Image (tube, rainbow, N blue to C red; front, side):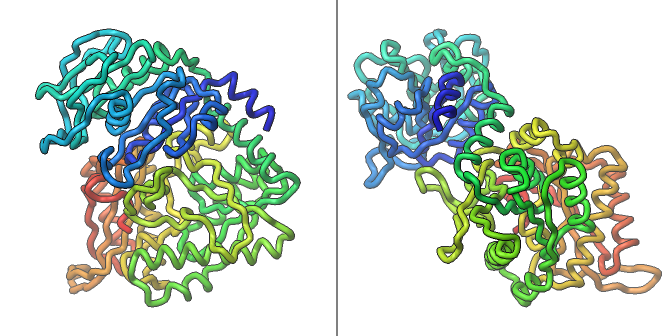
Amino acid sequence: MTNLSTKRKEIDTILVLDFGSQYTQLIARRVREQNVYSEILSPETNLDEILSKQPAAIILSGGPSSIYEKNAPNFDYNIINSGLPILGICYGLHLLTHYSGGQVSSTGEGEYGFAEIEIHSEGTIFHGVRSSKVWMSHGDQVTKVPDGWEVLASSTNGVVATMADKKRSLLATQFHPEVHHTLDGEKILSNFLFMIANCQPNWTAGNFINEQVEKIQNFVGKGSVLTGVSGGVDSTVVAALLHKAVGKRSHAVIIDHGLMRKNEVKECVSALKDGLGVNIHAFDESTTFLSKLEGEADPEKKRKIIGNQFIFSFDRIAKGLGDIEFLAQGTLYPDIIESGVSKSNTAHVIKSHHNVGGLPDEMNFKLIEPLKELFKDEVRKVGQELGLSNSLINRHPFPGPGLGVRIIGEITQDRISILQEADKIYMEILYEDGIYDSIWQAFSVLIPVKTVGVMGDQRTYENLLAIRAVTSTDGMTADWFEMPPKTLSKISSKIVNSVRGVNRVVYDITSKPPGTIEWE
């Protein structure tokens, strides 16, 4: 661990205290996008522990609470007088105001959505900022500015939008500079990082790999690791990372649960074994998984069944491979957010993910999740640095439960076969028309609805298939992809004419939010 500490001195660190905001990881991501290392901590982290990490600055996140609520998240207020630059965002603004002797109140009128601000001082934080359009999401507001603080900007309805205690390098914004709706948010964060915190932009995907390799080596010691591979880019990157860290002591395992895309297992094994020399094994567990899922239609129950069986299958397989103590998996931060897990434990559950929440008590594995604070685009950068092929790096995300969350209702072998064939055709046409790489994620969904059709002058009563394609940068929000009409026509025609059991195709044009990317 000594070497890791030494590296941290050379690479500036921004610590983000998480008060339960849905945007906390986005703050950390925006910092890393500017090649500055960031780390998310619980708000209960004390000053001594914070100082031990030698941060260049601290950012206090937003959050859903009012600072005066019972059990509202709090922090070690001694941090304010630590001499470290601090940026408070929304709830962070309220905390800094409160502990500096100001006042925060609920006026009964919040601000939600776009707002215009009037900049009173074009000092450091607003240096080079051209737009006054920002994103607000708050109920409480500053009603008394603390002594020693200066209001730098106000919203058009008179709410304090930005203020600063310049002597102590304390800044705070009521708006959220981390979201793309704040048009000059990136510039505002950049000003804080480089003009106030004096950071150096020297953290890269290569730095991340080196840090994780060292952490893995220290954690694993001379032990062996079972690395779960699903076929998606996340688990593939984890397999490559573990291979770099511990070599043949990492046993990459892909379990065919019967819910993979057509030829998925064969292609994944070939890419990792032949392309990178990864020690990978494939096991057919489809009979076991499908028997566990028989008759189950509830999406949450299906996810839990698949997730639990993965763990037990890995446990049995590990015993057959030798004494394996560790399990590595490709958990990403959006998975954690949607599962309602945060540093402050205040987030809402959107849907559970099979790879989030730890392991059953009876399991002896120790978890390794090297990507759990990264977004998909960051993972792709790591994969590129590790030498993965573009075909692997640019593959659309594929969920761990596989087609189990793309077959709405009960899962049967017949319905699996229908979806595999339809999805294969869909992907082939996206490649043929040169638009696959323009799409963040595309997939087919088999819906438990049958429709009347006419094929060959005969009445049909067959399955309804939905196709979906979205654009996104981080998976947290997404817009439906404006598919060319000719491509849509080609997809529909070929699926209906080639896939037995489908007589109608529809295109999903729902964004996230209000929908999710996957249907289940």
